[in-house]
Length: 355
Image (cartoon, rainbow, N blue to C red):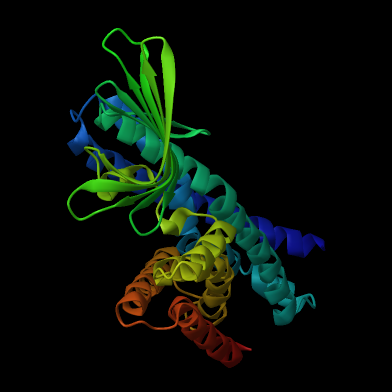
């Protein structure tokens, strides 16, 4: 990478980081203000709301990357254009194509950063945030660990290893204690399925009961279990599909299909995760026509306004097509990629006009 490549990359990178920090601060503040309305539920207090808001920041970073890249590129290259540095570069033999390549290089770095945040950091922090908020707001959820979800129901302690689609649970254990804390009964089930009457239908159940001086072992293929919670309650400790890693979404969607369950929601989220980092690169490219075109002599404030409007339109278009795809059963890949494809075609068309 030449000196000019590094100079352009640093200008765009610093501007993008600045825009991202400003937008992240604003969105986090609004998220914290919204969380304050839940203070008082259970043991949920202001500190818990602050921790939740901070823990969801990686998800916001991932969502704000494309718009930040757009405005950051406009500001970075716009500053160079305002000081005639781009003109000087081109006069010295640094062509328009060379500038484009330098911008694409920093765009690739930003795309990689968005991928890392979305695939590794955001899912972990989102699960941590949702789990801790659910535990604080409900006295019946004890904790969620690597051994699964633990829920308390009086003298019962329920361990759920897996939350499955279709209102089902996998590898369930129900530990019942006596009033003095001694073990009374242990129930293990390979799977539990929720019924419309509010009960859970247990499959392949093994029950161990302690009766005075001996244990009783009983195995059943089917049994009924009454519990206070339903599948809707368990969703509070699950990560939304939008924040799950792409590989996990892919496996989960295949699992749903193999079991005859509708997987469109997870397929849609999978393709959105694949397309989103590419959108970051697209926003970098989309900024170039405004720098080399008719807006190259306008103020930085004008560029920020244009960049904000374009970013908002792109973000809204992506969100709308995601929902439209689910409602009207549009192919998940098409629904996730159409806004990106349209903006990419528009950007290429504008770039050809300013060469």
